[in-house]
Length: 259
Image (cartoon, rainbow, N blue to C red):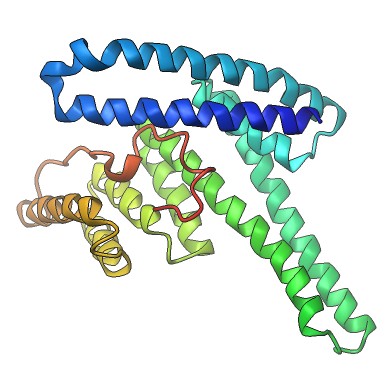
């Protein structure tokens, strides 16, 4: 019950967090109107979001004190601390969750193998799908945690660590557009333009021109910039955070497709 209540608080906090990001994007597009139209609202929404996060964190801590390997509480605590700006604690919870997820996937695979051996390989389609759904569910959540950590490291300017997190996403699933777009920006910040260009080209291959129109336009701009940097062998462009890489600590666990 404590876990469920804490996750409800987190879901409500997400609504405010998304509103904050929308307002911040509006400010970026219209800086002259920022102070007049947006800053006060952002402050109010931030206060409301943080109040909800502060309600969720003690509940999650109580759950983890009683059950240290509760996956929902670990993931929730990671997200709550990272959204509230307590990065170091949030990162530790995220790493604990990722270790637990990998063990869980291994255990489900081991159970499937043991079951197949017990029935001499006569595993029905329904039985196999049951085990594979457990493994895939853990992998999907693992992707989201890596995306979340990547966004945090981008915000902190730790571009090498961010690139590693996005690489982990791609190892799990090569069809996640955000992983390529965000990794390209982290690599460009490290002046690794060849790899950044490759990631942007892959992003453009796997995204829908209509669905991702705005992001694709920005990706093309970045591609031109990085190709220019390659030809000059000169200064490193600073990542723009297209798609939310710099500070999007609310989306990664809540977005099912990682767009």
